[in-house]
Image 1 (tube, rainbow, N blue to C red):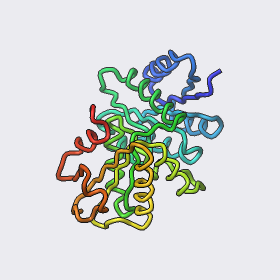
Image 2: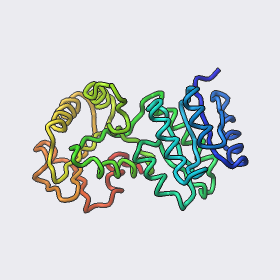
Image 3: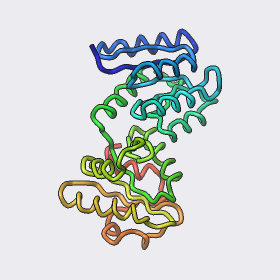
Length: 257
């Protein structure tokens, strides 16, 4: 019996059945379904799920957001994938800003295959804690960095971003150190507010870790920041700034993209 439990939520019967059928093609997953927001939230309260695949618009335009909120309150390690039509993309982007794993466009030429692939990636991230890059930033710049984190996820680059990965009651420093010691790339964001004391500690740890093993350290200048604001040891590295397209950051993380 599989230990992976997946909940599929859609108020339209046919799409719900297609998604369930596609996911059940993997015999190692247990797949369940709910036909509306209220039923989904009730099932989340009474059962353990690892992955939720939810339509965004059901009883309400923001049903997907409410299901995401309920899942995170019950267990923040639940990975939520939202399925959306064009008109609800802003809500889907907001879901990603709040920590959803990804959103899938219903108009995609092969949405069920894409949902399946995203579920596989979400399970891999959940079980193996696989991240592509650690995001270090001043908390004054959190909203800008969150936008960038969403952009990275939409390009299949999965960042370790503290707002999404730190559970209530956890020791932040322990989690941060554990992440830096296992991730092979770090983006160090410097904005107009400069470095905070906490970020300086992160950067120091990154510098120490980079001397032990091969870590890609990527200095990123946010809007209104200057090269002089970078720590000295980063000034000699290939700097990404936001006069450049975000694609340059992606190529710095994964040169093959």
